[in-house]
Length: 350
Ligand SMILES: [Zn+2]
Image (cartoon, rainbow, N blue to C red; front, side, top):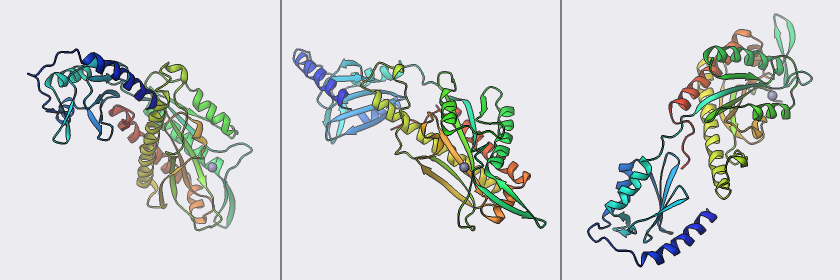
């Protein structure tokens, strides 16, 4: 905000001086409500009565206006001189010429890019030397050990097969396909190294199982990244508009977070459909620590259930139950993708 305001004030001062010599157009009175104009154009209007600043935005483009100021700034760059907006009856009013100019600006823009999911990266937790959570199951008097790394690999492999079949045009990847141990760094590096086309997003789906001291703890839950966590998600080489980078950066962060919440919700709802009759739904949760914290993509972590709970351990040892887990995650991803690709992709940050 700071560099932009400074530019605005500097430009505005020059233009106010120039404006003294400008002819006025009394035949075109500032009588059109900016709210009505915004509604007509289909733009969002943000008005800060304290500063007198008004922003119209649509599809990631913006027009910045100030009460009493003839300068309109489009997309933080190009300026235009118009009859200054006034404050009348408590709301900003402009001339018909003003509205036409803004309308022309927004309608001259190319349609917003349509986003698609290019890559789905499935990450079965742990593996190899790291078994993850360990539980025991007694069936027919025989006690066997169940390990998180094996449970999540089965679910991930099944999910991988379903997603490959459903989305032949997308890259579906596994961080491991056998009993090996990629480090957290390996997983994040793999995630961040995946090449995507323009306007393509990567979904990151990490699959785990839980364990607790208290054997009565049970149920499945889906985690997403905490909105407080700030990542650098835009490559600095992408733009030389260095002063707006921090803003874009924080906007992208918000959008990735929103998408992560949406996938988390879709997956949680779908798991409720497939395993909700047998396992408690512990809901969606936010956290800043998990494996995807460095991954530049919408991401979720699924805890399938507690291996420390005797009844749930029995479920998690059952192939049929794991297939239901995988089906739940699969349905959730499908729901998310159809939302994501059906809308303009990332939800607009306001
Ligand atoms: Zn785990």
